Structure formats: structure tokens, C-alpha cells
Length: 123
Image 1 (cartoon, rainbow, N blue to C red):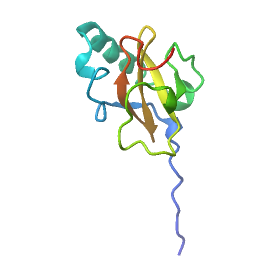
Image 2 (image 1 turned 60 degrees about the horizontal axis):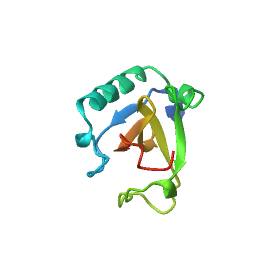
Image 3 (image 1 turned 30 degrees about the horizontal axis):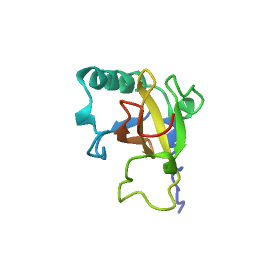
């Protein structure tokens, strides 16, 4: 009898799935965005729907790519589920240079904050 072990899934070969499930309440919440920012967020995730994670890593941070920022640079309180061993957040631009900040798990990008006024961290 032959036992087949499935290949591990390489999530870098998939496009990102954007989730608002863990957006934090407060100043940087989706609900505090104006209509223009909400529309630009929708455009931003639509433009990335066919770009693989591996390609995002090689794309400019102010284009359709992402950048890492240290969790210590954030001015908002961290959610309780962010553990001490967690170091960096990912940042995508959603409206010009306005960033959405969150983290990646497998192929899902969980948005935590929308920095609509450039005050969430030092830019």
C-alpha cells in the first residue's frame, strides 16, 4: 500500500483575500472613512484580485505591493490577539499613499486599521 502525502500548499501562489473581519474600532476603523476612501479601498482590493502574493512581494510599496512596519511604530493600541512574538504588520496603499495596515495569514490579509489621515504611525 502506498501512502500519498499531499504537497504543502504554497500560499504565495495565490492572490490575497482581503478580510475586514478584524478591523479595529476607533479612529482608524472602516466606518470612519468617508465615501471616497471607502470607494478607493474597493478599487484597491479589486486591482489586486489576480496578483499573486509572490508578485506582490516584488512590487513597489507605493504601487500594488506591500511593505512591513514594526509593530512598535504604531500609535494605536494593539488588539489582544496580537502576541508578543509577532513583530511586523503589512501595509498596502488603498488611496494614493493612504495605508491600510494588517497582517497576513496564509492567503488572507486581515485589515486592522485604515490610516486615512497619516497619523497611525510615522511615515
